[in-house]
Amino acid sequence: MSDLSLGKIVEQLDAAHRDLARLAVNQAQGFPSALGVGDILESRPSLLKNRTIDYLKKLREEASNEDIRNRSSRALFGCIDLTIEQRTASLGDMLKFYMEHGRMNIDQEKIPALDIIPWLQKQDNFEKRELMRVDSTIFLKKIINPILLGITELTVRTVKERFGYDSYAHYCEDKKQVSFDYWHNKTVIFLDTTQDNYGNAMSAWVENSMGRPFKNINRYHALRLLRIDDFDDLFHPELILRAVSQTLEGLGLDLFENPNLFFEIENSPLKNNDALCVAVDIPHEIHIIMQPVGGLLDLETLLHEVGHAAFLSSVDPSLPIEYRRLYRSSSLDESFAFLFMGLAENPIWLTKIVRMNKDKAETLSKLANTKRLCLIRRYIGKFLAEKEYFEKQDLKDSSFYCHFLEKATGFEHEPEGYLIDMETDFYSLDYVMGWSGAHILQKSLEAKFGEDWFIKREAGTFLREIAFSGRKLSLDEALEKFCASELVLPSFS
Image (tube, rainbow, N blue to C red; front, side):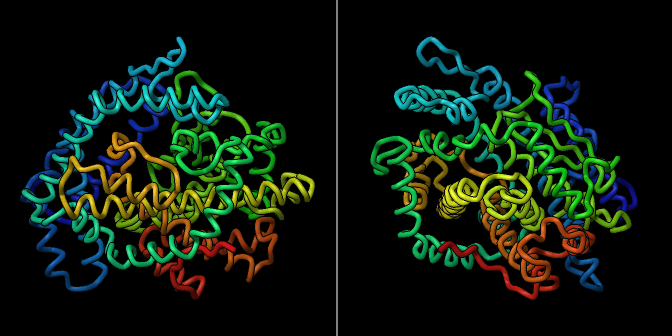
């Protein structure tokens, strides 16, 4: 890239991300692509060169104002992240191949590796879930973990040897502008203060649903439990679409009528099971991709992805690319997603919009509330494990994972699952912060517009005002500006 400038670098970053986003859309729908991640990144080598990195570092250090410093920092970390992705791309392709072609054998039934989670969510037979634990553990140990360990080692080596960080954790702290020690302390306190409430609720739920004590139950059974399919008869596809559409119309968002949004939510044998909201061009081309599995889980999934779309589609198109495309942390995006997803546990929304009777709505609300607490605690456990793992830098040691996840969730976690369960870029903390932000947004919406804020156009206007600034503000800054609140973890009674 001759005549380096921030504008030219950012244009190239945006073009690379558009191509990667289109690839993600195609892969999620099962469509073949001639190019892979490595091909896309190698087509823009200037973004990966030392000269570009050094230029951005100098620009950040000598910036004449905060705006230039912020924008150059986002571009710098954008280039570093793509460098890491390019270096690990071939291993990523290998991982994708084995995940797509791996099969688990359970009582003569062959389950694709990519279908393990939905299979467990539907599987009523306790012994078969145990067999899946054994089979998938072997698959992880023999095939997947060596590849994942290679990706992890290469990522750590890149940030240390090429970019001068003493650990991957400190690189992510610098990028996110977040103190992991601060969040370590906050989350440990949260685990302690919610322990009794969580333990009592989860023990009763496990014993009632599985007829077994909570102690010594492993995470494979948790997937079945947390599906909450007792109410699935109520959540048929037409009702889910009507409920989500009515909510969006009430807020004045009308995403289903937005020509910039593409909903690919029909069933297809080619689709990946992971739901995605992919922004090819913010706010002009956004895809929501989802493989329906039936029931309440589809409602939660669609609401979550719609929350992402509500945020992305409301971003000011005139903002610099750095504030639309590039972010330090995704926690503000996730706050919108969890705010909408939280409607599925809101008894007022369930009665007014879904039209459940009050008793069923209250029962579902309590179960969903316990599920949310379980998930928050789980991602706290992941964050604490990842923090210690990357700070101690013994990449073959899985003891951190088992210790923190079992302490946080109460479910046993097999050592072999530590690599596949880790979140890239410490996304586990973004989720925890996102749940916290959603809690504050909900409380602010209720205070401003009432408990039925989800049918008030003024509430939709308020949410659009927050999203209009795109990713320029951190989650903390957005909550302080629009909600006059600091970021705190949710409360559970």
